[in-house]
Length: 235
Image 1 (cartoon, rainbow, N blue to C red):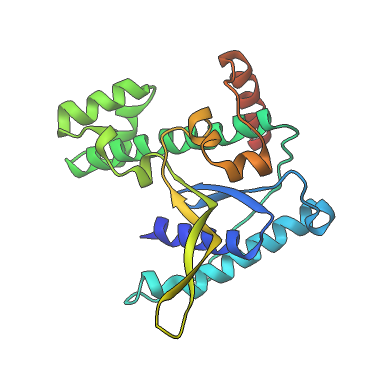
Image 2: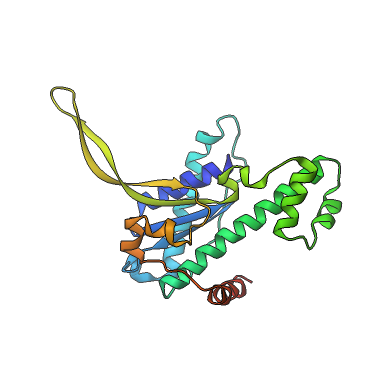
């Protein structure tokens, strides 16, 4: 439910600030991508992330009851933010690939950890079992010990959520004959995709291409170099 609340907040942020073209999130974090030509607050990083995180937090509080009607929000939520300058579409491509890869790694690990603890292991024992294991080994552990095919678990958790605007027909009013009058409007929608940094996903959405650019196939070597730079900045 918390993930759905986060997604709802991200949609609200995207609709509040038109310069935000694409968003991606999982668990308790979200990335917001502004269009290339944005002059939002003169592109001042401190002002931008302060404004976005404040609005996101206020929406989170407002929407809490919508997702948890029987649960009180006892502690005021707080989020931190930072601004990252992606100098080219290739850098942005590497960044979103990094975030989605992080989503997959964390979710797969937490899924394995949760199942091991559920079957009687202590958390320390479970972490020791998982220490040093790779993606395929975790998949085998889930399938062989618990009969779980990781690829069939909900996309929401495995792939994270993307938010971007598309043109949809929306009813704006009804005429005298009570027939609906429709107009094309841009609305933010939530999408789950296995590879948000891939050419197919990105280039099939004209709004992303128009405002951010066309994605190309990135070489594995260049991708690793860029991913390495993001990991260094994060740490």
